[in-house]
Amino acid sequence: MLAIVLGTRPEIIKMSPIIRSCQKKGVDFFVLHTGQHYSYEMDRVFFDELGLPAPEFNLDVGSKSHAEQTGQIMTGIEKILAQEKPEVVLVQGDTNTVLAGTLAASKTYIRKGSSQPIDVGHVEAGLRSFDRSMPEEVNRIVADHLSRYLFAPTKTAQEHLQHEGIPDEKIFVTGNTVVDAVKENLALSKKKADTVKDLGLSKDRYFLVTLHRQENVDNKKRLKEILESLTQIHETTGMPLVFPIHPRTEKMIASFSLKLKGFQMIKPLGFLEFLQLESQARLALTDSGGVQEEACILNVPCVTIRDSTERPETVDVGANIIAGVEPSAIVNATEKMLARSRMWENPFGDGKAGDRIVSIINPK
Ligand code: UD1
Ligand code: UDP
Image (cartoon, rainbow, N blue to C red):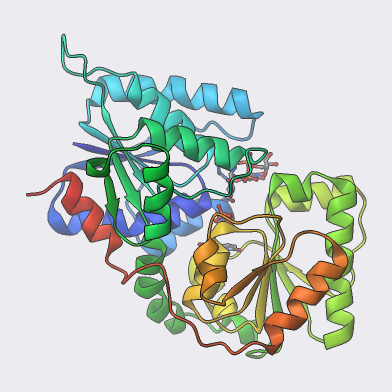
């Protein structure tokens, strides 16, 4: 039995190819949702749009401080693992859900008298920003060092794991399941209502903005300067900044009483609508991990508003610039990316990562 643990928007999207593969191959599995994300547009919309089965368990943990959230998820998961006795727990990415799922499974012994805990499989293993001030970096390091199966999306990720002393037999280079998710859903998304037109936009005539990193949006000065630099880009290009706003960012903009100019603010979109918006944008300005990858896959130039990335492959192929967070640097990076040719290779694999991962865990 396989337990698929997930809790946030990107985990639902990137686990979806694995869930579909389990269904196709007749693998015995259940989905455990931690409830880290819970608003309809951060959670349910993805199950509905992607046709995923409702989770068998939902811990409804909600928003908390890091320690409270991680602790409550661990307590909830431990009980379910003891009851359901899966052989493998699969986690994806770098959230508190991943940290808690990994820790709980690594200390749960389902076979009587056995000193062997439940095996953890980490999907998207080996990513490193080398910035431990990011909660995500802490979470992914712990998950990697406790996992039995490390599903590295790229060779770079594999090398990070090797350098940290993780034995080769635990590491599998599979590609990133985000490619599967984009390929499986892009065609489907084109059959839906035309989101770009409905928003009064036209292809290549707008910028896509997403922001939600703790270090960017919880800091008033930083957030204000980032938003002002984006307004400057709007004023020089005349193109709107379309901003599906993450609830964390919406809350912080309101609490800092910031005024925005040049933005077309919208609610977070479902994946099918977001794929349309993303694939037709002239350029993405973002601090998201998934958006850096998807923009690269969709041949959309990207400017990353952060000091580091754990997705250096996007920079190496010419699809992305890590601008930092200084306003002039964001403006300069945007000018550079607008001038660059949009031809590059997708470094994240062939779109069969989900099948590969399921075959490795369950070789029958
Ligand atoms: C979390 C992950 C981050 C990931 C992101 C994906 C951690 C430490 N962070 O960040 O790595 O990139 O998810 O989006 O695990 N909120 C809602 N509704 C929701 C969820 C959140 O209103 O459904 C609001 C709450 O005010 C909450 C805030 O957003 O306090 C932050 O949520 P949280 O899950 O703590 O972190 P994210 O910023 O979403
Ligand atoms: N996404 C979405 N709707 C939106 C914004 C993002 O479906 O309004 C998807 C996006 O396509 C990507 C994922 O959410 O697959 C990225 O999630 P997020 O930026 O929240 O987290 P990160 O990838 O940084 O962990």
